[in-house]
Length: 86
Image (cartoon, rainbow, N blue to C red; front, top):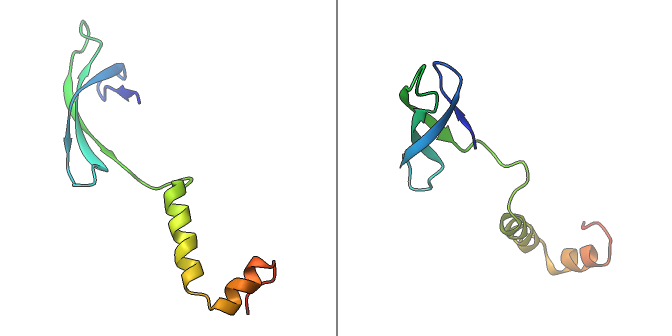
């Protein structure tokens, strides 16, 4: 991940991170501009998880298991035979 200085748009280095929630999906990133001669600013930016483009396989498997558990035995058997349930 690349962070850019909000002042001069040069690359910046992350010097530390402060997680703002237990899931570690939101954090303050403490940064230092790498353009030390002309800028050298230090700043804090916030990083946050937004959404999945492709959920993790474990989530997909759990979702499928939960959906299968809502079906009756007959509906599950029909599904396994390639027939739509119901």
